[in-house]
Amino acid sequence: MKIKILGASKNVTGSKFLVETKNRRILIDCGLFQEREFKNRNWEEFPVEPESIDAVILTHAHLDHCGFLPKLVKDGFSGKIYCTEPTEEIAKIVLLDSAKLQVEDAEKKRKRHEKEGRRGPYPEIPLYDTEDAEKVFPLFSSVNYNSPVKIGENILINFYDAGHILGSSMVKLEISENGREKKLIFSGDIGRWNKPILSDPTVFKSADYVFMETTYGNRLHESKEEATEKFINIINKTVKRGGNIVIPTFAIERAQEILYYLNKFLNEDLIPHLIVFVDSPMAIDVTEVFKKHTEYFDEETRNLIKNGQSPFSFPMLKLTKSVHESKAINYIKGSSIIMAGSGMCTGGRIKHHLITNITRPESTILFVGYQAKGTLGREILEKKEKVRILGQFYPVKARIEKINGFSAHADRDELLKWICGFENLPEKIFLIHGEEEIIEEFKEILKEKVKSEIFIPSYLEEYTL
Ligand SMILES: [Zn+2]
Image 1 (tube, rainbow, N blue to C red):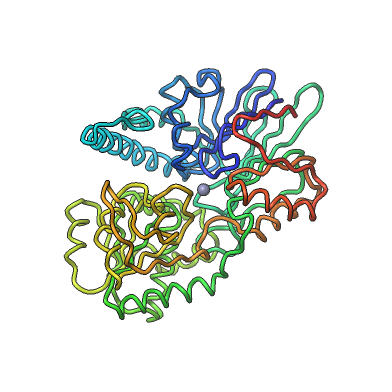
Image 2 (tube, rainbow, N blue to C red):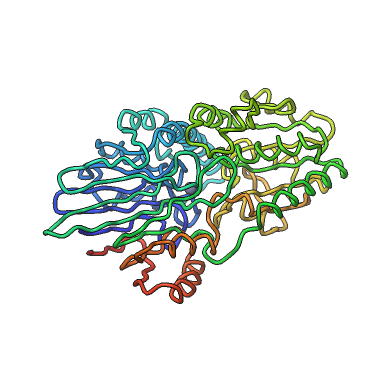
């Protein structure tokens, strides 16, 4: 078999790995490139004829894992897309949102370039629109954890809980070819142990080849206790200054987890009773999927709900779906917590809240998630003197804070715990889904722990296994 690397290699986004056997082509994940320097790859001709791909396996519903599907379908893919039910439901929300942003961004870009009399680095047409996104939906085929599915004669696929976001999976492929059977595991994004809402990541007994993510391969997250304490402090200090706490929030998992904590803080009187806005139609829709699929929660959260305590609805919580309600937030007197998307500030309503708050020293911009290179979020986090938002420059005067402890990604030690948890270590380990320097660092550490051959694939590289 051959594995062709089509993304998330020496970078974090655009996850796509093509597994090619004698008579099948299976794409593991179909993510969008989001880093500024790699975005043009979304527009380039796809390295493999989309029509020739038999199936897509989706590990989870994050945009960098599913966001390229509408383009793939538009260009000729018509096979099944295998994933869990929550992944399918969340992916639909994500793709519709992405289509809307693609259309809006292309239009804005076109207008701006027209005004400036120049042409952009890539076409000012959307990569796909709502109609394209909707054409993906009939192709979804939902699977359960630990329930093998046969794809063709020689391939068995099986999904396992990754503990990363609701419905997220690690995928095992058992491929028999030329009289030998090989087991491949794609880690998807590896979650964390002892997180609220979700179960722990699955640890495996054996595999021949493992493709593992390394987003945080060179660092350790704060502990849950440190993270919550920091969160409480930031809220209390900002309220004292009379500012707002603006949280660029990933709509999936992070939003629900932050709500879980805020509900807890309010119940325990650890923070003042200020209004919490979830100003993200997407986060609101995803929360509905959470409410529907409580069977994917960990036992603790299931019990909480059984006792009538939903972390997803509490008295101070205001869900603002309409633009009108969103704009009204600007006129609220006193401090409030504003959660809005997108999580890396690359689009959505957060940009408007940043414009209102980034020049106010009393406000706090609080990052609770990963900020990829080249995104507005990363620029703010790196405390650039001024940043461009919607075509205009603003000085960064607000306090900039970051809490890593809420990450949905395993940190260095958790990644090591996962890979070293194999009873029989894999023959080959491929380190993917991480920035190049980070992967290199992780490789050096991992080399000391395992005897497996370790590879760092490059974009478009091909391996014969
Ligand atoms: Zn993810």
